Amino acid sequence: MNKVVDISVVVPLLNEEKNLPELLERLNIVLGSISSSYEIILVNDGSSDGSLAIIEKEANRNGHLKYISLSRNFGHQIAIFAGLEKTCGKLVVLIDGDLQDPPETIRDLHTKIIEGYNVVYARRASRKGEGVMKKATAKLFYRILNRITYVHIPVDVGDFRIMDRKVVNEVLKMKEPNKFLRGQIAWLGLKESYLEFERDKRKGGSTHFSYRKMFHFAIDGITGFSTFPLKFASILGIFVSLFAFLFIIYILIDKLVLHHTISGWSSIMVTILFLGGVQLLSIGIIGEYMSRINDSVRSRQLYVIEKTNIEESEPDN
Image 1 (cartoon, one colour):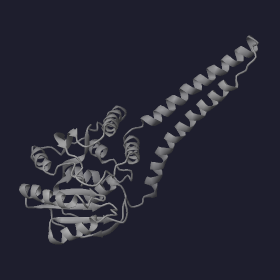
Image 2: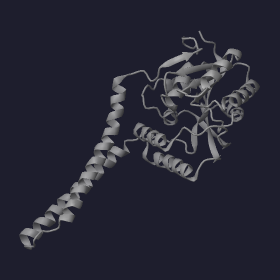
Image 3: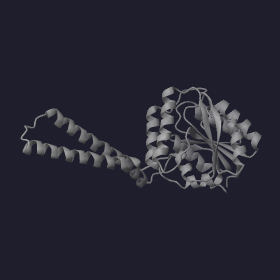
């Protein structure tokens, strides 16, 4: 059996060799000041640089350090979930490996959660080193998401947070392949609080969260916690059908009653393209939901572990 510890920290990593030494040093100092009973679980999500070599070297000389190396890049949220499945901590912290989330904030999160909360998330008071467009799109996305979902998902919050064992165990029961952990944790409805912090600039390397990945992440969040797009497609279909019906009546009256010659190739083409566009949009929305149903029906494992120093056993929680 893996030994239960006071606190576990899960760190997903993708090509972070420039940040790893400082990250581990700061994490060990912070966690050591909280408790001597802790573990750091690094999840190597298909890095192509020297991250794994650094991880293995550090793990050989640091008994607190555990790691999982996935066979390929399965994605940020899956990497976090893989780490969560291996945790043995009474409390679990999620933090990225780019040093934008200061490890020292973990002390304050720990102080807050022992007041009696199930989860305390770190809310970004500022986001240094990020462009105006990225800040604006992130801010807009979370506010729109809260308007169209049935779950209140905290705004200006990433995955950086601390949770108790109850939250972790409940999240691990959610086996859907398209992970959106921020929404899943909020969906639980357990006692939560937040702590504001100043987010730092990335220390080394470049961001791996491109606009394409941000878009797919947003789609996962919306389709996982809202049926609004489906309702929107239905309402739009009804509106366009009504418009088309009224337009048909107008054409018939104009032709049969007023005896006007119907001409206008341009207007016909505009109408056809408009109706076709609405149909394709609706089919696309339905297709997104169906693709997620298809992923769930396959029941494939969420990830494949290539290397690890964690024994295959169930934590005694």
